[in-house]
Image (tube, rainbow, N blue to C red):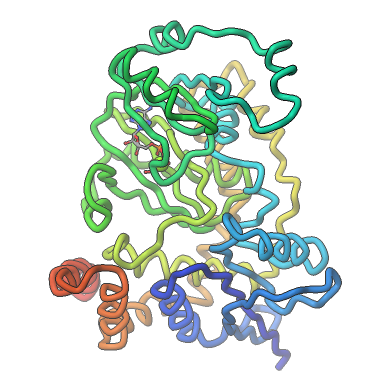
Length: 411
Ligand SMILES: Nc1ncnc2c1ncn2[C@@H]1O[C@H](COP(=O)(O)OP(=O)(O)OP(=O)(O)O)[C@@H](O)[C@H]1O
Ligand SMILES: [Mg+2]
């Protein structure tokens, strides 16, 4: 029998929990025999960082990257791997590097989504460049910050155009806070954004064509942010949250990403959705962690065994045609976008393929998550994450939620 060995490279920063889970679950996949009679086997390797010749061979067929958003040597290695060796990347720096919240706002506005009104203002501080004084004196328009804010209406949000991790985010109630926040923004480039009055905050984690929409509480401490509540959105808003996150991912070619949406009734307002390194920590995701790891393994195996390729050209004009179709309602457009996104992710083929080749994976993951081996990972992760006096409390917390996941599947 022909054999095809696939190596999955893990490009890691500081995480230990999910890589161990990923390695363990992938080991439990064993091998997959495809219709052409080829036996596919999978191994993982934690990638090292060293000088590389631009023509050195790259061994992994797929790399899951958690590092390149801040460490640029491996980022350049990823680009070389993609261009020279055709390595499949979750995520590709070509799709993420120039992209941030701002680009996603622009694209989603262009497609007619309900992004709250957003204005980009110039830097507060002079830009560190010898040409700045002349350029700004000659070309920068004076502007009235108060007028812009009054036009958006208070309260409003001021946040960096490339946001992440609450850095520089403020909720602004009045002109004094507006000026204080702008003065403090210094060298950051800021958006002013209208507030969305909402009842729910949906955070959708997507891995390939799989999406989990979670009830997120940004105001709570990290371990309580992902609530386990299944029917927190109306069926319509739930489906739309899936569509929005799959759409933005397909549009940009992001395959491992989380999206944040504010939900009021049936209306879904996307506010943040460009995260090259989404949170998949066991202590944050707890109940949802086994799903996330299974999805990451499934998508990896599917991409490698089916030889999936994605080019840099993703047919963006097809989305624009839908956006420009005057005869279509918002709901009809969302339906078309969903179909285009599902085409990009091969959603139907993926689920058929997984049923055929990975049918028992869920059961294997369940066995592992219920085992002492997983519990040891859980305890070690908590110990590495929290100060000693909190270990017992957080072991109990995460154990309880993971236990709930297990028992729901066993009963
Ligand atoms: N337009 C808005 N209307 C209402 N609330 C908002 C709005 N924009 C931001 N927020 C609130 O501010 C928080 C941070 O905003 P945002 O997600 O855009 O920034 P961030 O830096 O990515 O933060 P995080 O890393 O927590 O996601 C959101 O989680 C939300 O609670
Ligand atoms: Mg955010």
